Length: 128
Image (cartoon, rainbow, N blue to C red; front, top):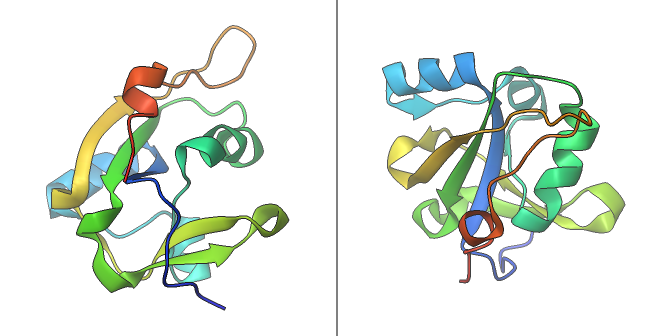
């Protein structure tokens, strides 16, 4: 059941293969990855959820982008729904307008095989 009152963070994050992001820039809108198309919405994570999302769904993958999105710019098409362990995750039921994107950064793999996220100042500066 969708929830209309979202948690506090202003920023939500999409982990995206670089080639899909290039296509989005060419089109002016991000229509989602294959998993998003299959599920009927674009999957996002909060800062607290993103590392586990990367570990579970993008383990060992290179060529990824971390896209920070201002949730306030998405309107009612953004729903917070229970997912992993019952936690509420942001799901966007429309294409992502690039105007809502605040920044895009590389998401490289570290020597241990885990993805290297931006510094906390960049990554966690997402108060409501």
